[in-house]
Image (cartoon, rainbow, N blue to C red; front, side, top):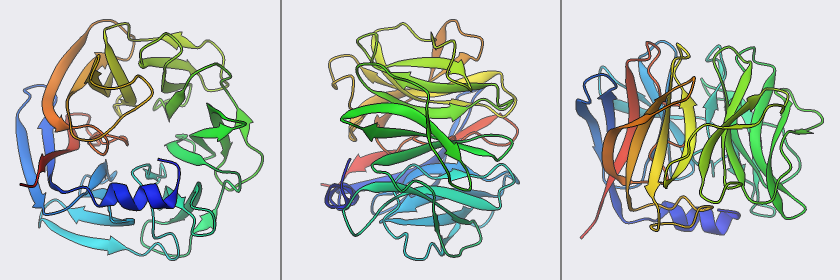
Length: 293
């Protein structure tokens, strides 16, 4: 989505949302909460107590023990999408917010406890995806001169650095826990596939080669496993990740190799846009959906 108008239309999807967790070893699923409208993209906080999700432009903290949700004060950043990322020390959250002036997505940072947002990327559109483990850099997908590539920028703001430069779409950049690599997805091979590169943009390597369109790789905190969402070939265009599709959450070793299906669900956009691994790397949080009748 590129504009505030499209973001608002997206929020009006007529769905019931299920906030779920799944055990990555057994595949056992548990529904934590049901919502009568659209929620998206749960981040697991480092203490394991809360899941952060977006709902109608705002961020909420869901307390797992009580099942209660509370809104996070984000000031004027009130049209945040499903690109929110927590800082490594869990004191701040970075978001993609659609600014009122031109409707374009830009990246902002504000305290996780709530507070005034700070603009990080004046250029737009910019869609956040990763925060480096040392807290110094943000990684994001941005459209510049009609092409979407991957960029990084100091977390306090500054000059952006372009890491990829190919025909097609590069998206979803996220750092490995050791900060040495950035995982991302790219259509450069035809279908959308998972790729990995060094944090400086070198050694760009394709990691999946199957017949699905694979999006949003997320590395577990222990660094051993990568989760991503897979759309069936033919269900979507390679450069699109729409809602309301039959999809899978798949796992693969961070060293590469075969993948396995962990969950099959009705979802897509909003299911697992952000890193939703539990701190102990044993569970994933995600959102599944049901269309309202």
